[in-house]
Image 1 (cartoon, rainbow, N blue to C red):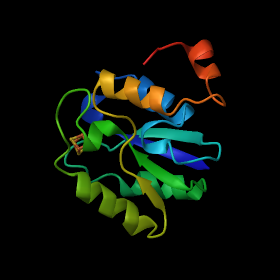
Image 2 (image 1 turned 90 degrees about the horizontal axis):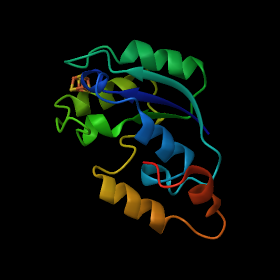
Image 3 (image 1 turned 90 degrees about the vertical axis):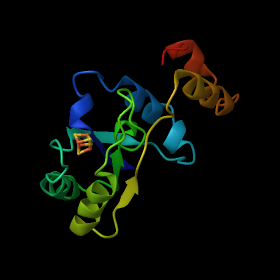
Image 4 (image 1 turned 45 degrees about the horizontal axis):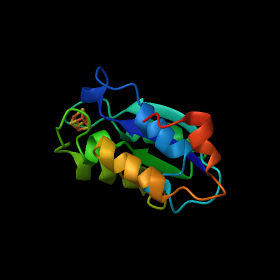
Length: 139
Ligand code: SF4
């Protein structure tokens, strides 16, 4: 499954994206029901408030045949700056305006370190336990 990530421009200076990337790689959080391999082919921002510049970026994603557009948890949950995007619905509408059928995954990881860790423990089984040994508990 090919995906591309849109993140909040306001958080760019505060966050390197590690939680989103690890969540995707580990099939945790918003991705725990997805069994196929997830290929992250692009990362961009919303373009800044008031979130009116998403369409042209999504057009490029669609041209690259992405199956889903992901919105980082910074947008819906306001991580890590504790500011939830007031333009969340407008951003989603712009994505649908480009491709009505494209899948939108509108968050990535849980809000707090504790929730992320609990989720990782819950989604680990004997088939994927090696991720603790290869990646440790890095969040
Ligand atoms: S429009 Fe929303 S996602 Fe984009 S910079 Fe502003 S608050 Fe962040």
